[in-house]
Length: 128
Image (cartoon, rainbow, N blue to C red; front, side, top):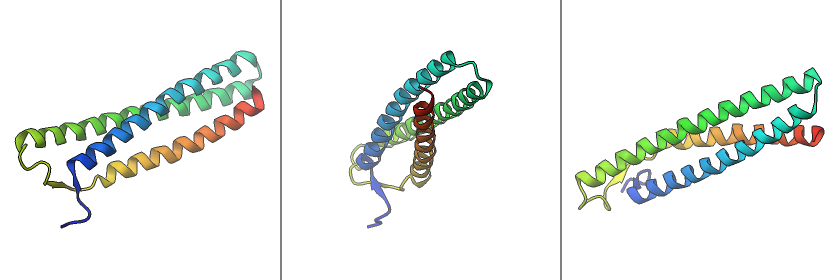
């Protein structure tokens, strides 16, 4: 048995977990954007406003990356569903290659997002 391969239910569990984490991050980005708007509304200093704009742009990039990841995960789920429909009898025994690229993309996103979140929390602590 190839220990690198996974059953469909394991891949589905990974996908579900990733989608749930992305939904959490989306809610958090909404919250962080509202806090940035509060700061931008309180200050007129050009440096502070430029920092708000830069951070807001970086959140927009992260939102876009979340959307891209979510769509890629949904595409993988559709492939798994198609495999299950094509051969429902053997689907519980069939092994699929690990989704190394998707897992790495999710980990990279989370690393970048957590760094940005730390930066935002420090910024909020300074200006709220």
